Length: 426
Image (cartoon, rainbow, N blue to C red):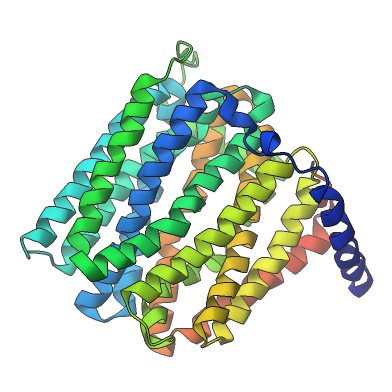
């Protein structure tokens, strides 16, 4: 066991040096040569930037109103619960109707919900239950948005650019995560949370306009006489019978439920552990986003030169170790450093699992398979938020974060020695 781990670690540095000689900016942004994807990239970058501002402000607002980490869990639970109710149906819808039309509708509804939240704060009517209800409504919209968004990528590009496009999707998401929370924290402190929500609402205009300007091939719906339930069952059975996809989806599930759960506690961590405020919370989220951005650009640059399975396993080890180090730190610069490393690790896991699942999924199943992927990703978030919020309420913030990282590390060790075929995926 020790010998295999040591061999992997000693080979890592020489391989990274060899990869650095193959770096090319043209390869990094390869998918941007497609005009439709360029529109998507810039529209989403603006929109997701606003979304991160809102998420940061919303989490800190509910903590400020209640002073309870449990309410952070309640809000996260409310946002993710609709995934259990609607996400799989969202995949069937994404295979039956034009995905661009679905996305224009969902993005417009998210814009409306952001403005409702802003008005409640401006009028000083906001209560914790308002935030929870609006988070639930946003979750419903996201349940139909996420599968369509995942499956829509291949309508904008050719298959050879898929891995690069997924990495660039992560890059703009994490660019926004690197900048949005810090901006949200500063705007929250200077102008109040209502302006964070207002700016988020306005940011949706960018992606709606981008979708409207695209010149796409005519959408041809999948011909089927199946009922919605039959289509749904067909997708679930496919994932369960495909051993590699099943393992990749399980890895996403464990990452979301345990590896990523600690993010819920960052507002409380900023105040209770680091003696900070809304700006500190923004800096913590920004550090995580910066690490993820670096990881996404790394994958985008070297997607044609990597053994994806081996890189995935490396990420599965580095990620929980960085969280353990973060949990024992009380010094802000060190905490930010460990969050940067954790952001790099988690994007390696999520990005490669996403790409490997899509690569191995046929087009006529992609909407439903990606709805199951999205269901696991979003559907387990509320339970991750709920369990770690309650645990922090009872035991303090530090112990649940350590426990979740150790559980994920144990899972990674088990997979390393029991699923050899995963390491061979390219």
